Image (cartoon, rainbow, N blue to C red; front, side):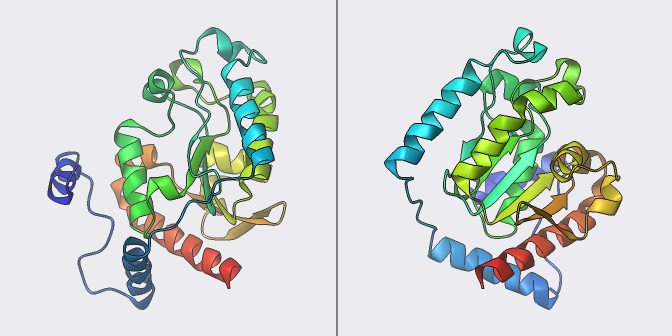
Length: 237
């Protein structure tokens, strides 16, 4: 899809362009510089070593055939995740929805398109990051995953993190944030600050499905993305 058609599609859905068109603040200017540099010097995806590749394939097979909880009885397909296996950025949502369950891919449909725009706004392509969920099967009716379902998938997510070794994690939405950080605090209190998960920085961001319903919070989401970029640059530095 060319850029003009992409913008037309976003406008038809009522989604504003993520990169501001007005006079930019210094932090926003730096983000655009990051995006420009990313386009001119695309990140080279380095393949994992043989042992990691074997472990990755084994993990994918294990998830695809998982029957640890009752979600296996109602799913169409498991959603392992997608993207760069050696990504610096790892995005973790809560659970697959209906479209994800049918396609076997995370964050598709309108919410997925907005997520793509969110990462593009900070100079990244979906192919450069790794996207997955707390649980790998769709809860019926898109309800929140239950504690036992989260626990059943916990080992899969842990092994994904160990193989990818991300430099930063974005916890996408309340359920993902509370699960990763082991807290009951609301998302409003979790966002806007840098957390840590086994020495990996974690930044909490709004779920794109929520932003589609609450456009006024997109400004806060932009601030969270700037925080994530600043945090990542500190890790890199």
